Image: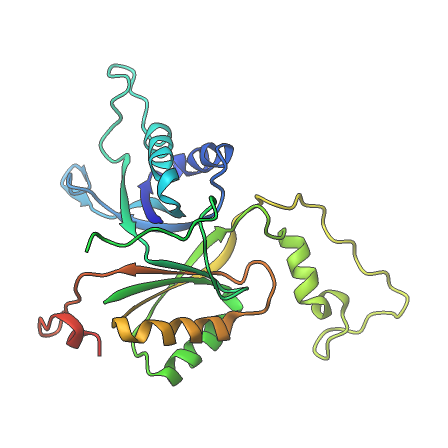
Length: 126
Length: 143
């Protein structure tokens, strides 16, 4: 099981969510965050805007679905550039993936199994 | 060291804080988030009417009196399953490995109602913690 933290443009968030939902990935959490990337924000004249609003999606998935989700997010959250198609723009976002050791459902207090009914395989390599 | 990320209901946040305090967990981060669960979960309308019937029918002590023969307002028709994002609370606790089972037990005990939408708890590995005040590192930075 892996946890995906995707930082994307807020105006693309709904599009990404819809695209994920079409492939059966519907459980997720949204956070409104601000921040900037390695370009250190936007310069408007002499003023540096370093806290740019972004939307963060937190999704926990079985290992087998992670690549698919990352492909969808990175394709849909990309800005369309007329003169440079398929390359996106600065500020389109980042996707981070971390390990999840265990997942529990509060309602049943049970450890979550992945969709194949197998025990969740996880954890960093020892 | 483990990072425990729990997604719980807004109205259970205070109860959870009190329970964690009793357990001796000093630090926790609370975030206001929106989220939704698996499609087999319950729609917002149904879960509200199931779990909190009194405020909606005006039978609670604090609510305004309603006539006896007043029909209960019909539940809004929403498609169950992948619905809208509902406000929830995200709770992040970094704890020593040994404390993780008791923290999870406490979170479950404080938040469990037996209905869909009670929340999820994720346990993730965390490499290190550093106290900003004095640069202390590792397990001692947590207490």
